[in-house]
Amino acid sequence: MNTAPKVSVIIPVYNRAKYVGEAINSILAQSFTNFELLLIDDGSTDGSVEIMRSYTDPRIRLFCNECNLGIPKTRNIGLHLARGDYIAILDSDDIAVSDRLAKQVAFLDRYKDYVSVGSWASVIDEEGRFLKKGKRRFVSSGEVKSHLLFRCWLHHSSIMARTAILRAYGYREQYVVCSDFELFARLARTYKIGHLPEPLVRHRVHAGCITRNNVQLTKDKDLEIISAQLNELGVQFTPADLDRHLLLSYVKKFQFKPDYQYLLWAESWLLKLQEANQRVLCYPEQPFAVVIGERWLKVCSRVSAGMGWTVWRNFWQSPLSKGVRADWKSRLFFSAAKHLWRQRLTASACL
Image (cartoon, rainbow, N blue to C red; front, side, top):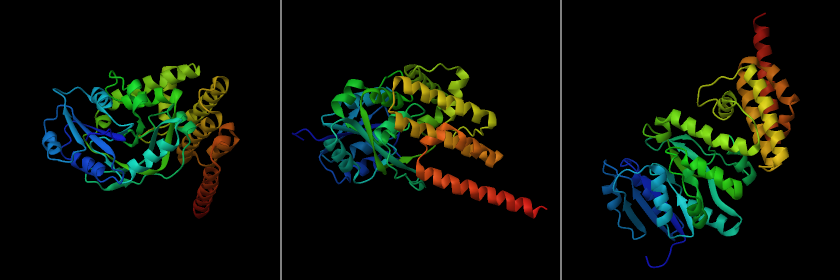
């Protein structure tokens, strides 16, 4: 390939012989064809390299680390090898839908003030069966930035970014896990990050997932990244506040069942974040209110399973409910009313 491609697709690989072929095939099948595919093997021992070498497409460039360097270092190698105007990321066990590159190139070509663009992702199992369909809801750049105060909200495999800026920022290699989260948080301080309202990747969940096998380290790094953002916001917090803050996004993941005391803490904490942001404006106010309201709604929803209508009274009376989207409020009203009606029917049947 003599001329520089428009897009450099980077797929780091470490012992993914079972899945890497599907990842490669999904890129070669893209409707947008002006790309190079950088396959970077990080010391695989399971036959992954042999699979990658079996491809003869001239757009593929294969590089092999002499030993296992880890994800962030391998990703940084990819950033420096890239020749395209844009870099698209795909993990070696995920799949890109056929028009992913075309839609993301069109977005970055049109919106010059955005540094990157991601999308929703569907979730598949080891065999490629759908476990969860990706959402199709619009999310503004302000909401993307606000979500990053709570968790790594973006799907790393869905990201396309401007090469020069992504290369200048790079992945911090001390983050064995969560290097993507840390990078997104830094980028969002200065640049706008877009998000297309459709699932352009299929994220595979399987026993070999790195985050699944490093739960405690992932949690520790998440808290470290969130702490830096809270400090920038000027919010004082305790270790207990940090743990509770993380649960605002992961009540299901950690099998956590919030009680009424947690509900009271959550309202006070979220109001504290909102008031701090109104002083320093780290985040756009209206999108921040939407994200804060979403967290408030989720906590109330979880607590209401055990306390019923009393919790929804707290929800509506709180200033936090003003940030909740109108369509969510409508669904919430009918859901809560239906729940109350069922409770009364059950009570009547017991008389």
